[in-house]
Image 1 (tube, rainbow, N blue to C red):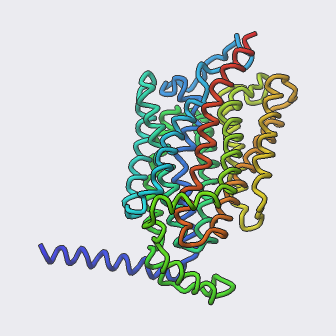
Image 2: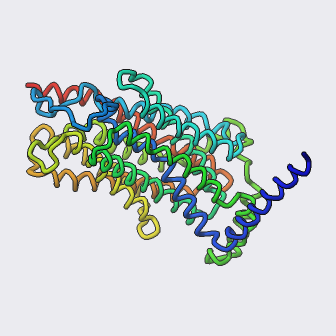
Amino acid sequence: MILRKTKFLNKNNIKMNRLEHYWGKYYPQFVVTSYWLLGLTNNFAYVIMLSAAHDILSDHNSNSTDLPKHNSTNRFDCNELSTGAILLADILPGIAIKLVAPFFVHKIKYWKRVVVVILTNSASFLLVSLTPSNLKPLIFLGVMAASFSSSFGEITFLSLSTLYIRTLSITGWASGTGAAGLIGSFGYAALTSLGLSPSSTILLMLFIPVLMALSYIALPTVDFARSRIYSELDTDSEERDKDQTESENNAGSINNGSLKDKFKLLPPLLKFMIPLFLVYFAEYFINQGLFELLYFKNSFIKEHKLQYRWYNVMYQLAVFVSRSSIKWIKIKFLPIFPILQIINIFVFLSHIYLDYFPSIWIVFLLIFWEGLLGGGCYVNAFNQISIEIPKNVREFSIAVASIADSFGIALAGFTAIPVHNSICSFGNK
């Protein structure tokens, strides 16, 4: 028995030594790629649920690939329930975990947190894809599992990113989360357009939690990261060594502080959190409150559901572009993002009531612009936090700041439902 255990441990040591050899040789590539994949897989379920919102609210488990007839009595071809309901199920559990996690999550080892993220991620795909369409509460539970997984994963991986070089981890994460939106929305739209049923398409996504596990395994360990010398990656190696020493001396100090000490850290974060809150409120109000009301009957994309799916693809493409741009474009004046995004709300609302856009292509361009603003605010806000906030409180600060966008999204969901009902009533006149 002891001999078998020794052989097993020796095999594990050989595998770890092999990994460390490659980590040492290709360290920047491993960190960037792992974080890109972690960002992709963490946000994938969340994106799929929003992309499938129109289908989830209808008979999404039907084996038929034919889309239902339009609501001919309503100008906007309205669903009975706004997709804002899916948005709420996809964000409220995340808000709950983001509110409480920063105060206790540091007591849980990172690998245990990742296991929770992977399990809830898997559960979300299984529940939504396999549950009969008449059991809506169970389907909504699956959407809520996706919300929990994405939010807990965001807190976990963003906090972990502070232990690596910012230009590697944050850049990879931001680009990966943007790619999740693009690949998820495009994949869902393409597969369902090719004839695969929504439930089968969602079930296919079970490879995502497996990819997340592999990505985390490939990420260099924290101990390995701390043991490295980064002189070739920084312009000032002495400053880097000093910074790393301070980080190690102060690591965990805020986690051991009192609740009062932690609340004192909130005021400096407001200049990041308020723009995040406003820009996410505006863009998700548009996405989940107004997208499904932007219906062009004579478009080259005939079906309403298909138009909704491709709106999401265009939005996610823009988010991917903007979140991947931080290496080349940095914007410090964050308020510009919510100002422009709120203007977008009025542009979309005016078209819905006045119907003055001559082509769906104008909507596609406006949605692309909307996505650029949302992704740009996200990546610039967290990049500035990682620069301006002291290292010993940065991990906690990033976890707290991530609450802001969730509150904005939740308010958008609550607002979208009555606005949807009001506009649909107007369309019946």
